[in-house]
Image (tube, rainbow, N blue to C red; front, top):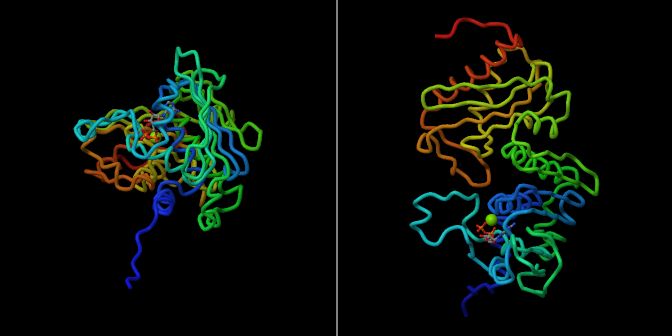
Length: 340
Ligand code: ADP
Ligand code: MG
């Protein structure tokens, strides 16, 4: 008799889910991207116990009809692309795989309430352990609310990998912060255990978004970066060399509007401070780097958010120059040796 067995559907589904959904922050990322793709202008995120007990995201986006809602939670269902040609022509949305709702639903208790824009009925769908539990009409505003409770309740091994509530919340906070900074025209709010962490106004300017996210002291110490070089445009805000923290977490870099954690960009920013930072202290930066799509590969790893540059040293030089110019013109650093 053979030892090899075919896994059942439920097992396959849960294994696959573990690869997309690693922790509450990954749930928040997927749902937030769905709200952005749905054209929302307000997105509120509320989490309980670091997101382990519950994640709730409400948006005022296009919403879903009952029919769409039932399709949305199935495997590989998406409204964002039709076929491989659409994919190759370039996708204008953050999602397109049609996996998130289905996989999140496989490892949590999921409730979605949604009403299409201009529609007159809303629908509530409950989904648990990979199956639709109920669908019924529900009174709700236009847009969508997604509630994810008891993440990994049916995959205890996964659940054991989760860190403390505080650490899980830090990850959630980082995700929501980066999306808020990258989307100043969207009003974003974050609550943890019923306490407001921050709320942006969605007025469209980075300055007021940074003020809402990081507070007045940090916002007032930041100066604008605005630098156009052939093939590379750098813009955003960087802080005074004395407004620092002990981690690199506040060096936020975006490439073509996508948040990335890139060593090259971080080092380029730090270099611009020319030794004026105290040891093990890091400034605040919210920096947008725009390059031609073929000058960078942002898909090195979808979850790690790393990039590979075509011309690494060129990008590095431009970013350092951009930040240096901003700091110099505000008298925040001393002029160093002339640049070659
Ligand atoms: P993808 O984002 O890759 O399409 P998802 O599983 O995340 O896959 O979502 C499936 C579909 O459900 C989306 O294509 C979209 O049509 C719909 N959907 C999900 N979230 C929302 C939302 N917040 N507002 C409106 N529609 C949504
Ligand atoms: Mg999605």
